[in-house]
Amino acid sequence: RQADIEQLDPRGRTPLHLATTLGHLECARVLLKHGADVGKENRSGWTVLQEAVSTRDLELVQLILRYRDYQRAIKRLAGIPILLEKLRKVPPPQRDHRVPLVSKICPSDTYKVWKSGQNLRVDTTLLGFDHMTWQRGNRSFVFRGQGEPAPGCPPSLGSTGRAPWCCGRAIDRDRRVVYSETLALASHDQEVLLAAVQPTEEQVMGRLTAPVVTTQLDTKNIAFERNKSGILGWRSEKTEMVNGYEAKV
Image (cartoon, rainbow, N blue to C red; front, side, top):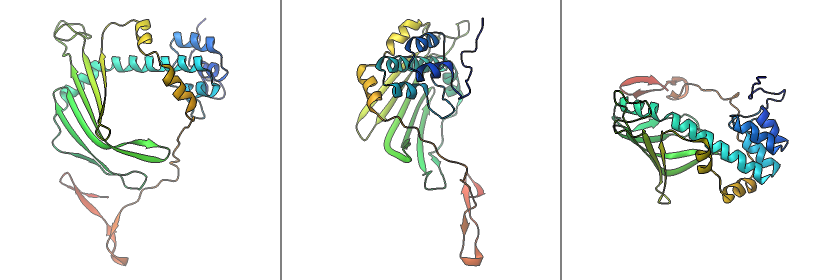
């Protein structure tokens, strides 16, 4: 009998979500082995991992963390050939890219981009958003890719007979720390990948001791309006030159 492994219950939970919430370790293990999606959220916005942390079950948290990282790795590996092909086609950037945003909750940032073939570097100072606060820092992201498909070669093999690969580096210039990860698209065994992403006890304990938090931004009352220039009754819509065009802001 066939069953939808991602079917939702009346509360918007998948079978994996329900098994995790109730603390049924073996049920969760069976569902994960059959491809249940760890990244799904329930109707309240909580992820499977957050529900696992709420049970305080160390083994369950370790299991969910392991399969979450495994599924992320599979998705990243599958996208390597597409990513390399798109990078090859993108023309080199001609200037810095400024991202203007108009309110205090959406600050501006300038991204400096360098590109050569399949290699890319991006410098930024806007790192993310956490607990209703924008995170700032001096960070560089460097991406190096190799493995151009050759005529007659399988899609997973490059012109050198090797699988396409890419190397990503996140450089924290404030702390002078470099984080590096290399991904290679090759025939892989599920058990080998699962063993490679086995979370450490420190990672699991870090999850169990950290607060379970989800951040939601209410967008219902957000509105945008034209910027005005001038004084009193002589105000008019403000215009700026953007890439050679006069635009209202």
